[in-house]
Length: 465
Ligand SMILES: Cc1cc2nc3c(=O)[nH]c(=O)nc-3n(C[C@H](O)[C@H](O)[C@H](O)COP(=O)(O)OP(=O)(O)OC[C@H]3O[C@@H](n4cnc5c(N)ncnc54)[C@H](O)[C@@H]3O)c2cc1C
Image (cartoon, rainbow, N blue to C red; front, side):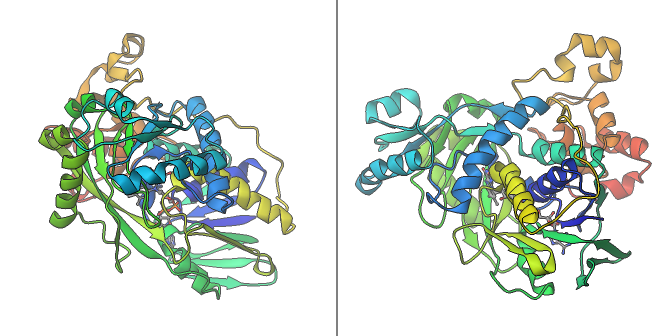
């Protein structure tokens, strides 16, 4: 292999795709049994502009470029976006005083369409804001995006371009030799000339196996509340707080599936696996929600979840080339990696090229895959008479809350990067994602998934959703 990429989150899948399209033979390894099963599955799902990143930083450059690349890619692949824009709202004197500097920062980051908005206009744009909302900053380029389909699209295109995807493959060691790396996984070792570390929360640990201690990952947990679709009427776009150095703060955002998100918290933890939500965290979010959008907290809660940001002691991304070892670390992709993923891949490819890497094959001619239309504003199969006429499985509802047909669950089990467990089905179809959280449909989803994948239904019910 030309390259081994460790980590099949949104960043690793993007890097693998990019290198494969350039002609590299690539193996993509992840310890999980599905792609996008780490931080990439639990974020706030915003296609950021990077308006509040540090001008001149690597993050600023890669978020700005990544946003443009991903917006185009999403349009080509049929990945749902909601181009709502965002309104950053000040709630006190200090925050209001910070707005002109934030506007200057936004413009320095290339967001020329950002503008200051007076208190009256803030209130006329967002009529349900709580008392105390002052003036704000409008950032039209902040959009909601379907985050799961992004990783899946990258992985699908990567596999189509020849990437060998090895899931359930934790990397436990790396031997660096003159000709290449022997990357150890429990079933043996994989040989590759170049190594890319896109291991997210485990990037520093993999770095250590190669002899580096350039940064330490501290998981920063973000808990979120998903509100029912009936709450969607309460806001027109994304409502942002004034960010601090540590966090972007608690926001309220529409999702492409028609729900409303409130969150995330920012809690530094030691446990790199602790994605539990807590009564304290949810309580704090509800208190913030009560202040920002009082009517929101009266709405039904559909779900809660938490994701872990790969924070380090540095604010900026930690992307480093170790040319003598033919190794690139892609670390510290903290809270903007969904947006920047395509630009990160470009950047990594540039570093590899600069270090003299060449690929064994010619560039691959490829177009983005067409992803299932999961967005609330897209034509879902159950509403598509032509599709149903061609295949009645698309006309039989399986998950009524999220309007998912049997045909979609069947397709997810046979996709180029197939679902192998209930979480995989959920991220590919939205089944069990709605108001009842699978109470009514899970048994049928399990039966169909088991039949299509040949899995044991009892085993499937034990897999994480
Ligand atoms: C609460 C929250 C909100 C966020 N909101 C946004 C947002 O709105 N917009 C945005 O752009 N970004 C957002 N982000 C950031 C974004 O989600 C991340 O930057 C991005 O998902 C990181 O992707 P990744 O591929 O680097 O990491 P991951 O998705 O974690 O992937 C790393 C992979 O490496 C694998 N791995 C680790 N160690 C090993 C090993 N030794 N062997 C094999 N495999 C290994 C893991 O299993 C994992 O699958 C948010 C993050 C959080 C937590």
